[in-house]
Image (cartoon, rainbow, N blue to C red; front, side, top):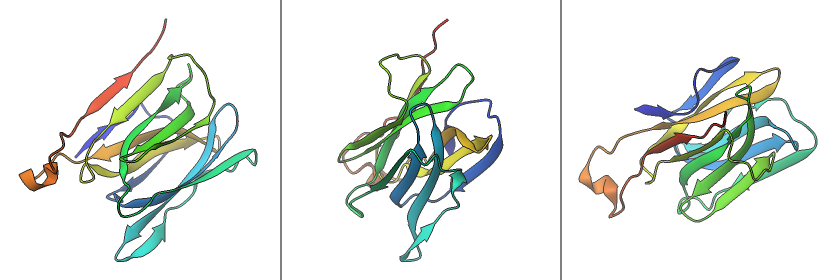
Length: 165
């Protein structure tokens, strides 16, 4: 398994490793940052909820609900500020994009874009919380284990972070 995300991480670590069947993402944000995030996923035939990471902003809130089982996560993108704090996030699926949540800007400074492709590639989230806010986020990605997992689509691994000086 590999990780796609920022480094080094500051704050208290959290992880939802192995929680690959995401059905909903609850996200609280304001115009400058991502405040909290929580996941609902399928486990043992039922819906399980992760712990909420961070604290609510009480300004912006969205519940991103996937059309499970036909819709699944394929990408994670967003932006970090100069201090390395997550300021915006976009979730991409095989059907559409959700977001951006948080700060919207035309700047590409601190931008990241992680594309992991097929359903079987996504293997969970990880990140940190600092000062009650989601400070960083990344994903666990599984390499394919068999030709059957290709599903006639190439798996794409892209990890890019743009910075300006």
